[in-house]
Image (cartoon, rainbow, N blue to C red; front, side, top):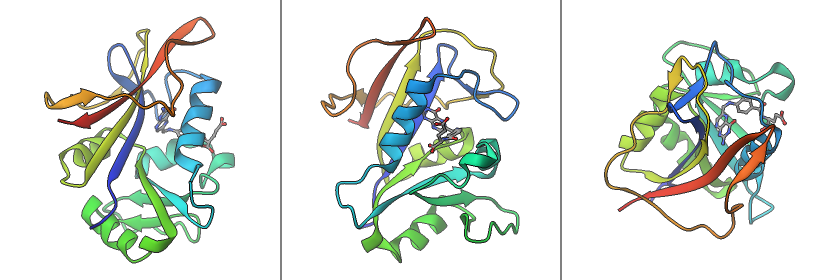
Length: 180
Ligand code: FOL
């Protein structure tokens, strides 16, 4: 039984997630939430995987790349080599094969985008959960979160911050979805 895929994303009112290879907003507390969720493990001998598309990798500022204390995996059909910084895979099934060979070292698998990777992960039989931050404002975007299927339901997760968050006058809420 391979690990489940856990998606994490922040989307604005128009479901935008990015523009010009960057994030449409700068929200420090929201980014800290991303870092904590993707980094923290219960078992201190294990690390989490962050699985992303090639453009998402390129969008991470160089000084934060690879994302520290996490196993970085990049999906691409090109023959790229990031040395020891990231493991290159050609598809989600290929990534899950590679992860299964290091199963005992991995606690959680976080899918961190972009659009195409989120869509494949939602359609995958290994989909587990979606951690979606709803940013309650419209931003100009050129990439969008895929449509959320009808059988997705909001669930309670007492371990995440509850209620309306606010930073720079922008309101946002942390949501968690599972498939019904
Ligand atoms: N999910 C959520 N909730 N918020 C996001 O901003 C987000 N971003 C991505 C995927 N899922 C998300 C993809 N984009 C970094 C930069 C861009 C990015 C993801 C991560 C990054 O540099 N992260 C550093 C911390 C940087 C900082 O503190 O400013 C890290 O170590 O996680």
